[in-house]
Image (tube, rainbow, N blue to C red; front, side, top):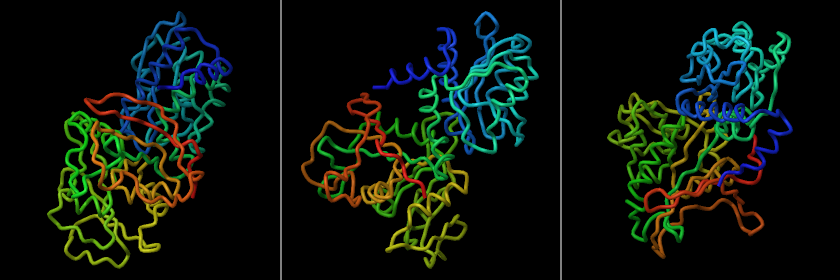
Amino acid sequence: MRQEDPVATHAAHAAPASDAGTRAMRRAVELAARGLGSTSPNPVVGCVITDACGTVVGEGWHERAGGPHAEVNALRAAGDAARGGTAYVTLEPCNHTGRTGPCARALAEAGIARVVYAVSDPNPQASGGAATLRAAGIDTEAGFLEAEAEAGNTAWLTSVRLGRPHVTWKYAATLDGRSAAADGTSRWISSAESRADVHRLRAEADAVLVGGGTLRADDPHLAVRGIDGATQPLRVALDTHAAILPSARVLDDSAPTLLVVAEDADTRHLPGVDLLRLPLHDGRIPIHRLLTELYARGVRSLLLEGGPTLAGAFAEGGTVDRVVGYLAPALLGAGPAAFGDAGITNISQAVRLDITEAVRVGPDLRITAIPTTAPKEH
C-alpha cells in the first residue's frame, strides 16, 4: 500500500519531466536498492544516464563502501554517449573527495548537460554538489520523485539527520499478538517463508541486535543464510552480566559479534570476544548511549530482533523507525505478548503507525509500518 499520490504531486511541482524521465528515475531507485547492506556507512545511490533523445545509455549504483559511486559507474557504462545527456540520480551528487572523488566534478568532466536528482544530501561534508554543477553551467533540478527515492534510502538519511542508526523492529506473532505459547515455546510461530524473508532483512542491515532474554531462550545465530553474496551484519548481543556461554551460537566465527555488557561485568570466560562496556541506567543498558556507540562504529541501520522487553524499551525511547511484523494465522490465547512495557499508560500515548505495506508471505501476513510521530534525537 504505497503512497503514490504525494510523490506525484511533489514531483510535478519540483521538476516536471517526461515519462521517459520518470522511468529513468524510478529505475535509478531500483538500482540503488541493490546496494542495501553493502555500502554502509555510505548511502545507497542509483544513477541512470540518458542521451539527448531520452534513450538510456548508462546505468550504475553504489555497490560497496570505498568503491566507485553510482554516477561514476553509470558514466563508465555510458562512455562518450553521456556527453550532452541527462543524469538521473537518487541523491544529490557528492562534492567532496573521500575514498573516491567528487561525483559533481565527474559529471561535469563527462559533458553531462543536465542533472536531475531526487533528494538533497543532508551530510554537510558531501553536500554542495548541486551548486558545483550549476557553476559548471549544467542545468540542475532537485526534488524529482523525492519521496520514492527517500523511502529507498531512509536508513542512511535517518542516521545522518539524527546521529544514530535507523532502527527496524522485526517480530513474529500469532493473530492474537502472542510471541510464544504459555509454556514458553515459540518455534515456529511464523512460516518457513517468513523466516527466509527475515534473512533478507538481516542482509540489508548493518547490524542485528538481541537482548539477554532472547539469548537465553533461543540461542540465536543471527547470521544471514540462504542469500548469495550477502554481507554479514554485525551481531550485537545485549547481555548485562555477561552470562552468555562461550559455546553460544552468536559467538561463532560466521559473522562479527559485539557483546554489550555492564561496565563491571566479569568477562574472563569470554577471551577474544569484542566487548562494549556501558554504564547501566536503572539496571539497564541505556538505549541512546548504545545507539551512539553503534553509530560511531559505522552502523547506520539496525535490525532489532529482541523480545518484547527490548522492543518496549526502544519504543519508550522513541527510537523505533520502522516495524515489520509477521502475523501467523494462529491463535494461542495465552503466553507473552509480542510487545512489552513501553511506558504507555493511556490510550492517548499509543504509538500510532502508518501501514506502508501489507503482503502475504507464505501463509503469513507481513505488515510494514512507520510511526506517525517524528523520531527522537538525542
